[in-house]
Image (cartoon, rainbow, N blue to C red; front, side):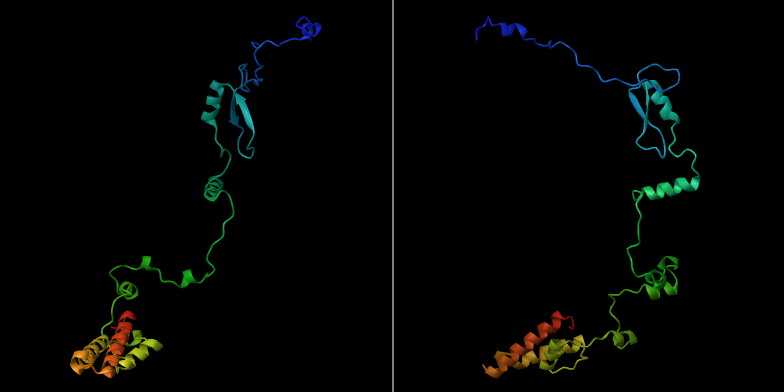
Length: 206
């Protein structure tokens, strides 16, 4: 094919300078206004997603007087605002124990200086005095390993912390290798006493 071919005469090239067609803009919906309505404004409640088209001047005027809750009673407005906190989705209580709230003490109604307040707000970590009724109730039974450790040291299940410490010092002095001239039986007894005391100390009994 040569440059002088007849096929080149039928080729037409569109002009690049031709402007693209602009999308049509609706007219302003304000009465007696012929300006383009290039700004959208919401129609109102129960018609979400629908818009009116106004020019810039009239959309400002429309927004000044727009009230989404127009025509609603105060109770309905309050209910709407409350539901808006959860995205207007239903909610349920998470607790299954409905009697817990009614049976629990209401400390907010008690005065801090009253006797009832102090009786109910006692420190759970406070140590009861020895010999008191509360101390007798709080003494727990030793676990099997703890009972075995107490038996190793020759103590009873209700031995106090001071009694355990005193007995430990006594046994250590009695079975220490320096005091028994290398007696193997005494050394084994010495190790058993130390292990028993460590277990009781970790358990919080001494």
